[in-house]
Length: 113
Length: 111
Image (cartoon, rainbow over all chains, first blue to last red; front, side, top):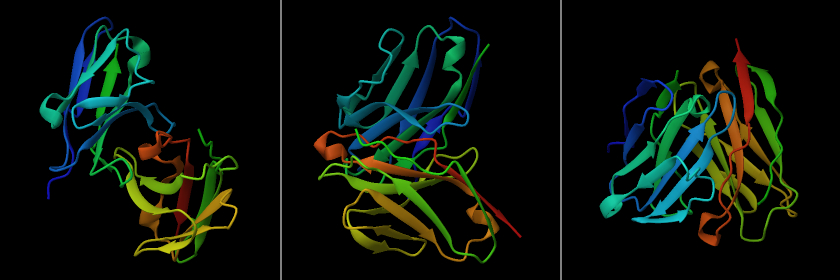
């Protein structure tokens, strides 16, 4: 069974540029999560989807971050414009439902110059 | 939100049993306790989850006392490949209390 797929794996951009991350969850998983992980820290939840509905986006910086999960499958996380402090690893995870274990993708390492 | 406290780091040798304790004094009635493992350059991986007493699977055991204010992850006979960061999470997404990752415990296993 394929795991959570994320692309790109690495991204280097200059500040003020836009960037987008893509996530394909495990087939049949209704819950999708986006996390941001800074160096030496644990993952920080940005947004959680139940199917296509965002049910927890309290930690998403809405002035520059946006996310969507059309048709309740794939998801895209966007940053526009990027700032130096956005450099981090962005992790996508999915689970069958909110109570079950989360399966994480390999992450996208973003470097903002 | 239930806050967790874990040791920042632990050291062990191959073949030893490692116990990592997590404190969660304000755990809610509906909260579960979940542990994840993370290797460098990888996403976290689920290890074990429990609500009370003891849970055991093929890789670890989770001990939860009756008051549920703490929990202990037990890794039997660790090997070098168990060197990783271990996160204790408390919460219940279904009840609206999101699982929050802390800084975790960095376990270093030496030969």
